[in-house]
Amino acid sequence: DVKVTQSSRYLVKRTGEKVFLECVQDMDHENMFWYRQDPGLGLRLIYFSYDVKMKEKGDIPEGYSVSREKKERFSLILESASTNQTSMYLCASSLILYEQYFGPGTRLTVT
Amino acid sequence: GNSVTQMEGPVTLSEEAFLTINCTYTATGYPSLFWYVQYPGESLQLLLKATKADDKGSNKGFEATYRKETTSFHLEKGSVQVSDSAVYFCALSGANFGNEKLTFGTGTRLTIIP
Image (cartoon, rainbow over the protein chains, first blue to last red):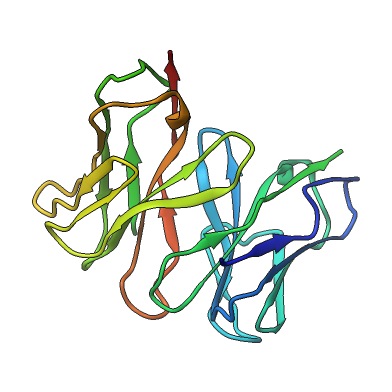
């Protein structure tokens, strides 16, 4: 079974803090993705990566950056957290041209 | 750009009722189409998919047919169960390398009452 794990299920941070969300997959997938999920908006892609050290902006990259130093790990970084970044963050991975597998999500609250 | 429009929720049905959740899309080329489901307290999981026109995806009694002429991928089930209560997302992705990001609809919350 494919396993995608995320470092925290719940996280509370203060405005202005730098926040790291970690995602690890154990199936040697080339592609990894970060989405945020908000009620009424569905899921929106923040960034994705199709190889180590490669990254592409998604639909809403502003205020975020990513890092992929190893194939199995994809990190999302909030450089200076703001209250409008309070959301559920979902990581996913896939083989090229195959279905995406999602992690359990991190519910981030920025106060 | 790509977009997905799906039926607004919430939807409440009685057990054994027939279910349809509408989904239409706008995309260039020939996207792949998906339905993902999110059960309470769980993350998203793939329910079914179709990769070319007229394909029918099916799983757990759910079906959806890729209709290119109407740009639709409606989800159907003949007899729903309480355990089908979840949020359903229609999504599409490009079918070529580097264009595989998923574009999601806003989700439809389904509640089945006994």
